[in-house]
Length: 567
Image (cartoon, rainbow, N blue to C red):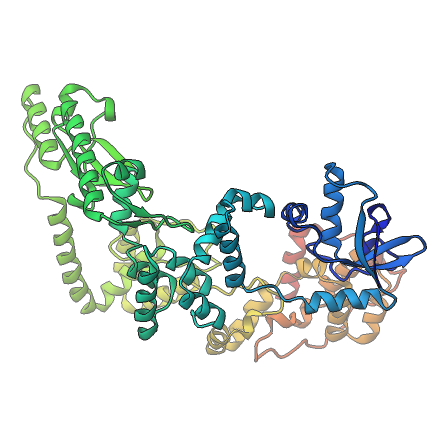
């Protein structure tokens, strides 16, 4: 039944008991625009409500109700203004769900065409923005999309503009005319290239060099010189109609900048791209930078580089190698000291170093003993610029002190090959890295790690695992249930049952004293050759025993005691 009720009698559906509004998220989304629309166009659609006594709870239309309350608070609507409602007598919650599911929004192309019709009827973009409560910039974008060729809008509706149709239609707004849009559309549809970047490229957008020149010169200066652009309403890839003009204007602005710099006394001004790659970190720079002395300016220069935002990055006071050497010779002559000896260039030194590397690679491959010694020396030290580029990064290397490469190499060269192989095996241990951050991904389940474990000698491995296992740390940390399970497995079930009555500290003490000596290991440390615990006689667990009452030994001694007993 449709009727009207006073606004003061309406309540949100989620305030009912039980709540009848299906929507929980987005109840207050875009209320400002909804207020503007209702103020300009009216409510448009009656609220669906359920009557409880003299009050009405909204099952569908709660965002509209929030907007109505907002207009009331702003004095634009009377507190008891009559509001159109549909009073339901069924399941209001089910109705709310059904209406939200059934509601299908307009296709964006349809929306933008309607916005264009409003504009063509005489409304400005500002007026449309005010009537719908949205930013004018958004309206301008909507109108640009609404002006697209019907050919493109229909393709959008049909879903034939690729995986990102929104980006594609935005790109078409860069066209100067509808005819240009349709020409590019037909060409790219035929070649299967209807995507945003390709459309922009075909329409003249995405010209990186022209965009950089435009940003450097400025849009206003470019337009003042007679240039035109088609603005990218959705980004910064404006179509520069006259790239040559933008380039000329940029060149003139740069020439003026360079002329000013040379007038300041700098010997030269050059672009970063025209200099060797290493200039910024290998060429010397005079003191003072931009404020360098006149004498320093006369023997140094300025390097220019465009930043991504098309502003200039300027480095002052850069000395070219020839000038730096000449300055050094002049300084030596004036001081009466011998002139520095002539040297080769950095580039030549780099090329010669490659020659040495290749020759050494050939020679070391023919000398097994020296190769082993060099690899060991490289593994045993650290730092950059070593003749052998190797490193060990296992998680057992922590705290190890490194020795100088030359000392290690000298010691290893004195060993015979068999001793070197043993040393290499020991050094390989520093590379071992068995690490996991997740309990549900045990490291021994990893194929590479388990493969390596299976390749090792089993008895030494098992002995090492038992020696390294920190029983006190383990039993202090794990839940009681795991500690009791360890007792049951290593000792017997009866002792595990008795241990369940002990305090945590007493339980840990019993475990440390009785479990490790059986050879028991946690499941995470068990390899395929794990034989399980050996039967031993354990101390009995009772509440009255001295063992149960005793305090734990200090943490540092517990492991030592455990290892001593195991030995």
